[in-house]
Image (cartoon, rainbow, N blue to C red):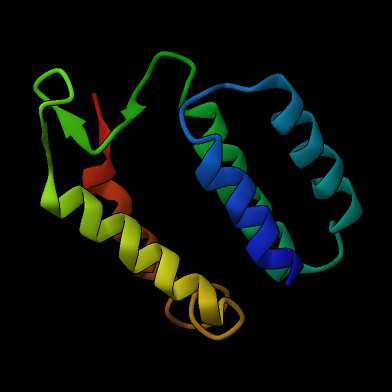
Length: 107
């Protein structure tokens, strides 16, 4: 349950560089320093938040919000569905599911 909440924080604040969320994730990283599964997801969520430092943006919409990318939306849905069984999919041997979010990030 806590793994889903950690990834939820990361996915909601992706690309925002939110100071409060990054502080929460820093505190979670020190709390879960002995658990590699939780620490892996905290680091992924921190990467999502830090993507907002001007490098990339995360938005499935383009052309001034008029159109949306079906591939980017599919990546978001695949990741959201894989969070339902986070322990076996994302932390287990299928952690490459995060690569489906590549089209979600735009430069």
